[in-house]
Amino acid sequence: MNPAAILALSMLADDPEPPLRYLALGDSYSIGESVEAAARWPNRLVEELRLRGFSLLPAQIFARTGWTTSELEAALIEAERGASVELAEGEIGQRPGPPYALVTLLIGVNDQYRGHPIASYRQGFAALLARAIDYAGGHAQRVVVLSIPDWGRTPFARAQQRDAARISREIDACNAAALELTRSAGASFIDITDLTREAESRPELLAADGLHPSAIDHDRWARRALPAAERALGGVQADH
Image 1 (tube, rainbow, N blue to C red):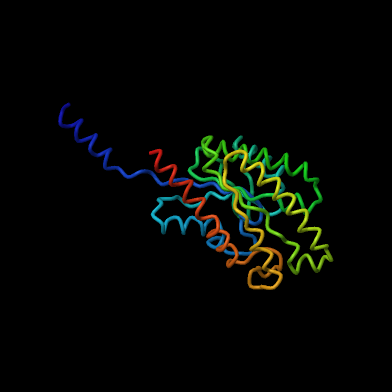
Image 2: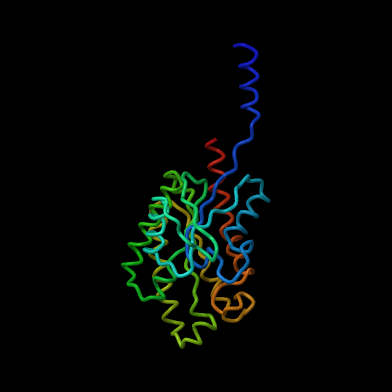
C-alpha cells in the first residue's frame, strides 16, 4: 500500500464517530407546553446523556399540543411526504430521517381526554410503536416509551369538575395496553404516571396553566428515562 493510502486510512481511523441522533414523538408533554424549550424533557434528557459521555445532536422533537395517536401518525405521514407540519408556535416539524439511535414515544392523553375507546387507543399506539421502531432502524431496543401522565389530579381538571378517579382508571387502562405492546415488541417502557399524580399535593410540579408539568417534572421524567436511554445508546456504540 502506498504512503498516501496509509495516511488516508489513518485519518479515517482517527475521525470521531458522528453525533448520535434522537427523535422524540408525542403531544403537549413532549413539546413542553407552558415551559421554555430548554426545559422540555427530551432536551433535558439530551443534556443528561451528554454529561455521561454520549455525543448527541439536539433532540428532534416531533410533537404538538392536542395530538391524539391518529393525529400524530397522520402528521408523520405528511412530514414523510415533504409537507410542512406546524408543531409549537413558530416551529415546523423536521421531516423524519431514520435511522435514529434513540426514539422516544409519549402519546395518548388526548385519546383519553376525548373519550376514545381503549381499543382505538391500542390500535393507534401499536401503529406508532411500529413506526418508532422503523425510525430506530428496526431496533426495538432503541425505542423508549413513557407512560401517559394523569391530568385528573390538576386544578384544570377540578375546574372542569371532571371525575379524577375515572380519569385515573382510563389512563391506567391505556398505560396497561401500551406496556403490553411495548414489552412484546422488545422496547423499553418507563412509568412516569406516579410522578404526575404527586401534583395533587405539590403545585410546584405544574406550570402556570394548572394543567401541564412544570420544568421540575420535565426534569424528573428525563431522569427516570435516562437509564433506558443510556442502554439504548450504549447498544448503538457497541454496534460501531
